[in-house]
Image (cartoon, rainbow, N blue to C red; front, top):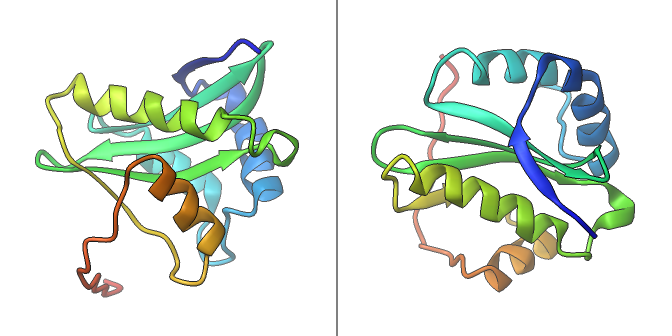
Length: 137
């Protein structure tokens, strides 16, 4: 199965939002279209889409803060989960960061999402036992 990753284009937005809903990565308090717009404002972040036969099958929002990389909205079409597509889109995110000189990647996973934690552990990610604090501003 061929796989290509590239930056999101305007014509992709509806398909990306549909994929995020199908993959269960959206939350009621986050407007996905607003998140896409914010991500695309500068040069420090992008959304990569993974294509199988020209159809969007995966996404990752990837960005860097000058020190570390971060990923969000890692999503794979439900029927392709377990096929290696998630690994491929994460590799594309890592490559994007590496090309910018970023050598460390952080990500957040809800503690009860064991399936996703196991996925990242298989890719070499580990729990760093840090506490993530948040404040709405």
